[in-house]
Image 1 (tube, rainbow, N blue to C red):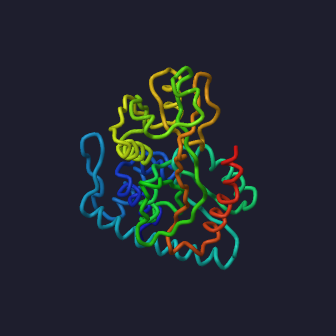
Image 2: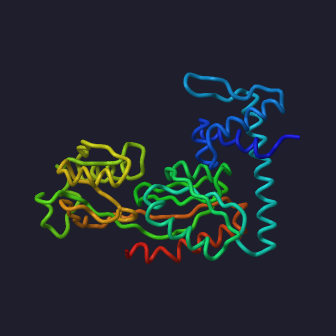
Image 3: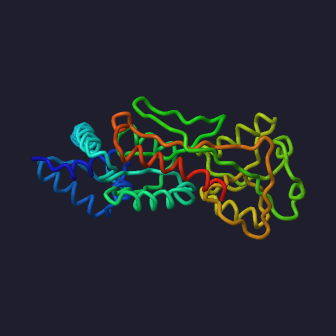
Length: 302
């Protein structure tokens, strides 16, 4: 009989592409995932992973088995949902995917509150890009995603995925102390077309929003530095190397030498929780979403 835990490990590798990424998502070590798949190979008498450069690739047999694993995991999830629904209390493991600044600024309070209220609930967080997290929800790798989008760059939800709004996160332009714009209460997009920008890398929601917005103002943005972490962007601004548009959530206290300037109209990114339609009845999902919505006003005010 095939072991469900080993099938889950294979499925995770098929989704994430590497053993290391699959291990991080499952909360295991890479060696533990490799051992699970090696045991599965012995059980099935089939080669599932082959070396490819420094990494591995799934064989054709492995892809077929991973597809079967996904169907089995969906059946197991449905059974878990029904049991939890009958008990009426949040319980069991809840896999949450969340983007970096919310993982820093929102989720610690939310997870602590859930642990206090519902000791039987085992919520586990993985930091992941919003676009990836939504896809992972749709494929059943994680149970709940906390993602964000912008007004001009909406985040599409795949079929079979529901979502609820958590709240709006405001953004500010950060400029170095002594910058010509630092003394102004507010600026408009047209005032920023000549600036040297510090931005997240291409392909991120924030980068796409910046490029589209300044193009609409008639100028291609001059992006001189790219950094994924908001804290790195803030440090580059503090060094006088450019300006940045940084959301407030998870930003923390700004260092000396950095000034916030309001951009008029104020940019907003909307935070949402997403989950599969089949899991909508699960008390763990409904309670986690309710807790996030309940905490958001105090988090945004802080």
